[in-house]
Length: 128
Image (cartoon, rainbow, N blue to C red):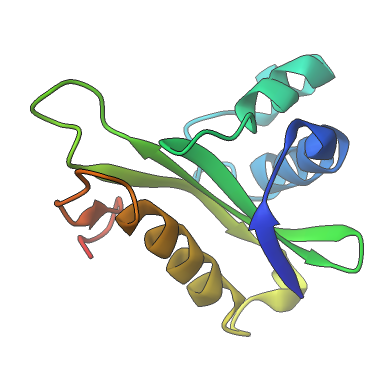
């Protein structure tokens, strides 16, 4: 299993995986399947345009994307010390395997290496 940053070259596999996640877990995401189904591939490529303050990591089993987790840094001078994790999803056949935990550890390690990142990482359900 390889965990790495997604790049615009991964847009096709990311689009398919994200659409599957949105379709399966309709209440887990703020985005919806129908809207995203109509979006061009360029939209998904732009979403995974990695920057130190905004990125998505993916886990690959061979060439298949099987998990994702995103990060963005809060904006503004009073909020830049905070990071946010979003869009965490693991393929159903790999749930309860520890992959989700590995994904979160990877995102948190990358986020903590950013200059000025002094605040805990904010997850929707708890603070780390």
